Length: 367
Image (cartoon, rainbow, N blue to C red; front, side, top):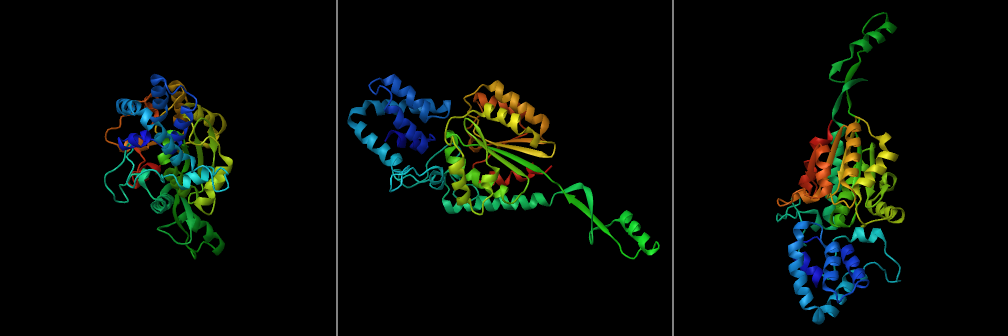
């Protein structure tokens, strides 16, 4: 019941982290209190601010370990070991976990408290971590509406049309040469739409489990409504998923991701992943490109590498946007080394934890 107690106190303990904790118990000396505490703390906490709460609950857990150990192991097995395999004993894979990302058979009904959760239950303010499968459809719809509005943003250049707000005098006079200088047919002009390009890089490491599916659903809506989108995901390594998301349904897109993308819910190496992007894909970025990075900023790599990669991106892109789901919490502060290294290079630092935060993204997507 230890993981449930952590969730009840507001810690973001995901199913994948429970699996890792269970595996760790099979590898460490369970009679060594310090070894157990440090091992579980490194797996089940994502913020330094969580350490005091973890220490208090661990002390209670340790004192009752002999009476509760069997019960705790049964709980862990019931909550995570029944999910990865189907009736035939075959692994279910990534698609199953993303489809059932917010389902936990052992957790009592109610919203799991996570950093950034909202107490308001309306669709606009409700935290993504508590969204049902039906509510997630609204995310794709929002993405499509944003794309339609972006497509209407005019550029400074004009194009010739049969009818429009202004007469294209030059083209009309040129056509008049065919009729001896008589202005028989008038041509018109209107502003060309801006051809903004988007490059989206989404963190799918273990600390982002509660938000990976909603944000991928948002990216799916962009990808299938806006032709000029390049999409990447990373945990410890970078993967391009642009082609995988171009599917008729989101479920089909998940199936393609499950079979072709590795490293889901792993560790986090933001700097190394962005450095890989700069080496292999930087040619896709120019002054008409908006870069969007979706991550909570927890990085196990060196902050200098992250800063160098972002500095290179900032020189190339028109705008660099960092969306952090944890920013939806009033108590959140970007104190991690990764976020501290990234902030000087970010043009827009905004939350991405509910529909309202995604709607607020619209002005930043227009150049």
